[in-house]
Length: 163
Image (cartoon, rainbow, N blue to C red):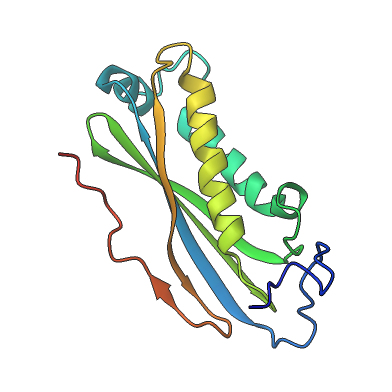
């Protein structure tokens, strides 16, 4: 089996995508942050001592998507046309973060979406750690992607069972 990020001598390399067609590509990734209910109530009321957690985490996630090639060694710099981060309260102790990234390019944006969701979750933790050091960042995952040669992907088990 040939590995795409290794040459014939086993040296790391960036995959050559120059022969691929540019196509519209989109990826959606998510992360969960579990915390004490009181912590989530403070976030929702925008009463966290460090400021507006949603606003800060949203900006951090978008910035992270744009800087993914600086963090993940073999990622291509991609002309991102859209990056968004959204928040949804799933339960009194669980926040779901979703990150959507779009581009028209020769390679996908899955890593950018995953990086955005991850950094947004880390930012939530950073903004709230003085109140709740026991928070957990869980289940960072690709939920769906479209475009490119490999086609579409849709995760069937998006929301975990909290039992």
